[in-house]
Image 1 (cartoon, rainbow, N blue to C red):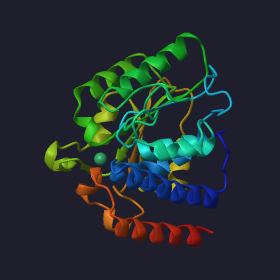
Image 2 (image 1 turned 60 degrees about the vertical axis):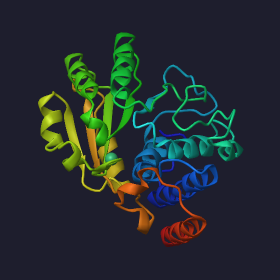
Image 3 (image 1 turned 60 degrees about the horizontal axis):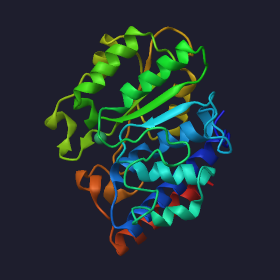
Image 4 (image 1 turned 120 degrees about the vertical axis):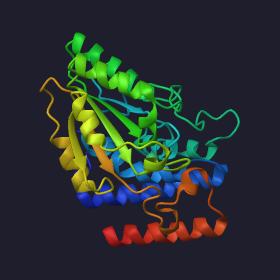
Length: 282
Ligand SMILES: [Mg+2]
């Protein structure tokens, strides 16, 4: 399971800290990007890509591979850092992020290997994921579809159309994940468009819901993902309670870091903090 089968928690935590460093480097170099939401979702992506999902970087189009959709497409930097780390495309391409003629544009592009869907316009990923899961069911395939959404994204009506359809078609090979960091571009999600109780809402739509109290904790994430049964006739939802900007003290829980570029000094400080985290894990 997973591309690299990093089963050791230490290895996975170290990988997450390294990916945080890589994604900030990309944003700093490019002069643009979405640090806050990328940092909050890194642990979810690392758990899925290095331990949970069935994927093969040498054969990214295998029909039996698990599928992943980054519906919160703006948080693309961690996604690119992971895909290049795993060898889906060369690591060197990271330096071209957001540059003219680069394949690494500011939101996921299906021109890149293993990226099935262009995202960024919020609220579309779950519908597409439901379609993939329905196709798998009709074709009697065993792959699982994972869709990572933002919590601000829950205000999009199309999310709930997909929720209803996935339940209607009993898509038990579909898992939605909400990066529940409590913030969106314009502030606190409960002030912009109150979401709670999210768990009750999704349960009432017929989904099997698991809440991860610390969605930046690798052990808790893996436990939640591994408990998801492949049967049961219900789609699954993981609400991962995360911290926006996780891993860098001055970015944590600060809405302005949704779309802000670190200065040279800030980048230096962030690196120091992340290097300390790597040393601590080792
Ligand atoms: Mg959010």
